[in-house]
Length: 65
Image 1: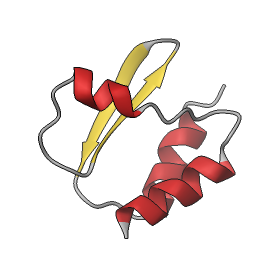
Image 2: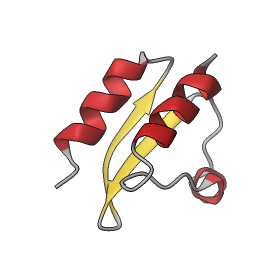
Image 3: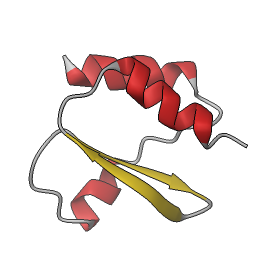
């Protein structure tokens, strides 16, 4: 279910979101779901656990500009 939610949000913000699974591997993330938000190569926030699509949208909207 979370993969579907992430996919939907990623598709909605395709010009502002880049899904890079190699980052999770490099960061040695051991649990899922774990989503890291970056802007200009700086990590803004790590969100762990199942979240609603609304929460992902709000985080992206707040940092789009």
